[in-house]
Length: 304
Image (cartoon, rainbow, N blue to C red; front, side, top):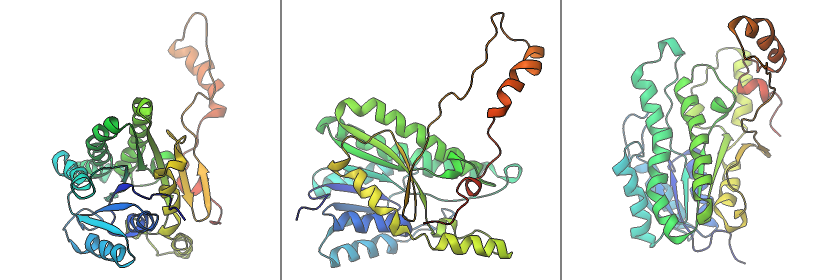
């Protein structure tokens, strides 16, 4: 029986642990040759270790798959380009890129350091750009390829204490859509996945109150292995008509997320003044204002 990714060469960044690990393992089991990229940093981006990537490669090989470890950082352009080169050097080509690598440096906005903001932007947003940009030339030449970028409801909806992460993750949505538009003529696809899953990236959630403990217990039910099938599908030829979309995955639920479109409009033939905006414009629009919702307010039922 043919496997969905037979013969394909795939890069998964941040593949040493959590969601990335599960995606690398599943893609390999579906027949892909996998570049397992992970510099082995801590959740905040500090330190490094070859062990996480090497252990995933060994597990893939143990089950008869093909993989190679790569330890480059996505946060700088030249090292990121070497991840793409690794795929070509080892496997002769590249068919798919999963931009999963990430770090967290949470802080309430007025206390967030410039370094914390820039570091998260570099890994998530710039990293997704650097790896994708290096791969895009190959995809253009071969007139095929698939990008899967990781976003978050922290950016799509909102969350406390994550201005850096939210900005990066919503930026990735814009990046993905632009790639989808620019490269559609070359049969290159680009989609986003917003995962709900327990990993060390969210392992720092406080558990001091009973409500917090209950919330974390629910999140821990959502294993990272639940995310991998959607990603493997998006990398496969079965997804040849799927591009420019945002999918949220939560346990056994898959959501197609909305994208920004006009909600209501107002106009005056003579144009607007500050006074008429206050008296008429904003009151007319106010019933359609978005509340200050967080992700947990929107996804407020237990995972299925």
